Each structure stands twice: as structure tokens, then as C-alpha cells.
Amino acid sequence: MKTPITLTEDEIAFVKAMVIYQDSDVLALNKPAGLSSQGGRIAVHTLDELLFAFAKSSGVRPRLVHRLDRDTSGVILTARSQPAAAFLGKAMMSRRVKKTYLAIVAPGAPDPREGGVDAPLRRENQGREAYVKVCEADHPEAQEASTRYRTLAANATAALVELAPRTGRMHQLRVHMASIGRPIAGDPRYGGALVLGGAPVPRLMLHAAALVFPHPAGGERQIMAPIPADMANVLAGLGLAAPDRWMAATA
Image (cartoon, rainbow, N blue to C red; front, side):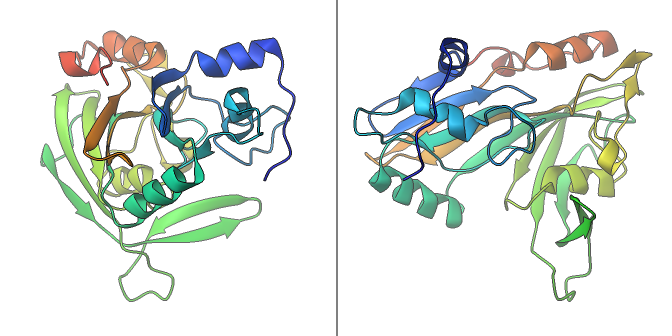
């Protein structure tokens, strides 16, 4: 068991404000951009460490079931017990957890506006940084990767797209969208636009908007996180409107 970490009152309030769903088995949070899920190199607590705010008197705390990149916002799921963690871990491995992301890409809508990217990926380290590249299926380090996308709103400058990864590779959505000429805005690593409509893009425009998963107690649950303010502001500046279902959270 990880050694408990002492959190400040502000840190406890910060992480508790992220809660969007909880029951006896799971705790779902709406992670803000800029917060590392785990193992960050900067001298601030990661989300994994902030979960000590929910620790029981025994010291047992929720466990991350999956991760989001530091600059990606949105739904992240944790398990409140070891049996729940094992159940959800198996569900992730068997691809029974369905994830939906929203992204702003540029320039304009993908062509076609709806489709899929089935392109194997491989990881490549350059110094301390890790990059992911599309590769041939027979490459010795190739990993199967599949993404479905559809355009929700678009103009000549940019588009709001809904992304559904069928696999969970590192940087998959970022690399797949870049591979079809529509990198995600605010992503300099993979060629994303840093300015849109004359305004700077504040960060990677990628948001984990919904998660559907089998629940340890039976049945399915759907958790949704609304589009965050920084992303909504970029869309407004571009004159693009998101569908109503993404503008308010439900659980």
C-alpha cells in the first residue's frame, strides 16, 4: 500500500470539487487540464496522490482505473476497493469500457467528415520525451490501434469532432488525428495549431467527455463531463456550437 500523503486543506477541497459521481464501488472525477494523473515530473501532487483525500480510516484510498494525459481534461474513473479495481481492470482489458472524447482539430473538418483510423502505432523515445508514430503492421513494435470519429461542427478554420477510441494506446487520438491531416489544436508535439482565429489556443483541446462502463454491482453506468470553460471559449471564438448534450453533465 502506498505511503499516505499529507494534503493541505486547499488540495483536499480542490480534488473533492472534481467529483461528478460516487457510490460504494466507484468514484468518478472531472480532471482539469494541467493535472498529471500519475508520475508527474513537476513538484506538485498528482491526481493519484490527491486521492488520499478520500482515504478510509484504514488508509485504503480509491485507485485509478485508467489515466488521462496531463493536458487532457475530463472523466477519469477510480475504484474504491480492491475487488472493484480488479473488476474494472478486467473490463478495461476486454474493451468493455466505452470512452468518448471531444477535440478541436484544424484546419476545418476531416475528409470524410465521419470515419475511422485503423493505423498501428509504435512508441519512440527521444531523450526524456516519448513520441508515438504510425507504423506498418509488421513492425516488431507495432500495436494495433483503432479510432472512430465524427464531425459535430465545422468551418474553414477548425472543427469540433467526437472521438471514440476502440483501443487505448498512448497518445492514440492525437497521433491518429494528425495522421489524417487534422491534428488536435494546442498539440505542438504532433503538429496541432497553437493559434486559431487569431487567438492563442490555451492548451491541448482534448476532453474526455463520457465513459460507459460495466458496474461491479451489475448493469452499466454512464458518466459525462461538460465541455470545460477554456474549450468552450475557443469554440465560441471560432463561431462553432457544441451539441447541447455536451454542455451539461449527467450521471
